[in-house]
Image 1 (cartoon, one colour):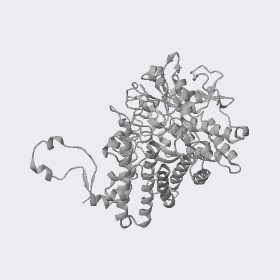
Image 2 (cartoon, rainbow, N blue to C red):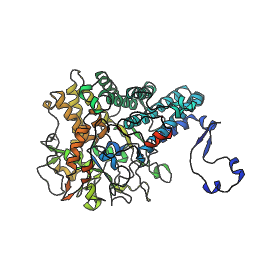
Image 3 (tube, rainbow, N blue to C red):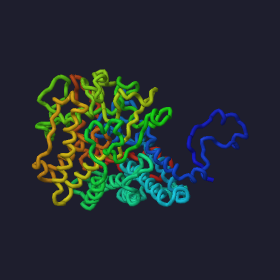
Length: 581
């Protein structure tokens, strides 16, 4: 008989009683397998629930890797030994023994296991319980969810074992190697997951919020092809010299589906990151959260991935992680409304409340980075001071704004830990349109550069329109203009604009490092950044000096190491990524 463990609590006292009858007592926290598998819709719900079963040491949004591993962000917290994430931001000390890497690997495969079980349940009971149409839709949704977790594993670890429902049914997980398929073959399998979803799912799903639809599958297909289009993930074989034009055409094809859907740009950039707009037209697919007052549970369905990232002294459990870098702040500088591409980092600067100077800024700075003297998330009663940083001599005075609600909204969970009812965007519309612009710039299609300029200028226009509603106090600091045609006269200049726009628009949303890797420029950008950030200071207080030990090694650091525990759980089964021990 199949059985499913739902909880893993052990009653140690009972185990020590010595009672011979103990082994005959039916275990608690276990659901009879036949009963569970006979309820395929609940099994699918379980697969959905798994993508939100996050925690700060295995955040599924990957912020410690996509942000800390980039030039956008410092770790924060109580010092370099607070959590095991310090090696992720300096790279030079990164090894396979980090518990966070092992936990992330394990939890993502737990998500995949739920998907495999749901597919078995749907195969055995789907049509009889749900009917042919709904069963087919649920199968497609589960393939989407499984592809979602595999995409994250492939993004992080490159060489991974492919464990599907056939492996699960045969109980052969411990004989599946991680070098059975190449990187491109694994991507083909992930693409097939999303293609199965795309071919079946409707444009609109009406039987339950938060479900995947055809547009979400199209967005993921575009992301997969965009990643592959640049190369194999290693710097020596990534970049403009390795672009696969057929894959770029696929990006344009699938983003066209998104472009022609009901989704669009939310009118104000700030609204995107307020919980009351979390399922707006900007949100193509997001991990759903809730307040306990919304779902009548004790704690709600909170976002525990970001639980460390509340501001120190603003939230009762604000642990002050995920700190924007000075380099990121500098990148928001404008001159005549346009980015200062070549000399943005020549001199550190930051807005000072009440002191308007000739230096102007992209308005998105004030929606992304909390700074002393300015309201925290638009609320003057919670204006930040230098006291709102936990370890300023190490991590500076900036705080992250996007992933937190307004303080007046109250706390989702008020205890020694705290989380927020903030959805985690998997894809928002602007992200997908930037992917489209990137593919257009790298393609050879007629009129492609002008369409890319239109996309980017639409995004900049939205930023220009995002001042009065939330950041009127910063109006005199802001200046942003649209790109003239001359900036898109050739691929090289258009590429510079696209990459800059992507950094500003998606800052602190866990994508920056993976963008740098895709473009084949991570070592150049990061090693230059380490030298700059080491010398950063705010109002005379120097911070970031630990970057003197940082170094990114091309040919090794592009991917994270296979976790030590996984390598030695079944010795000889997995091969380590190159140049890691």
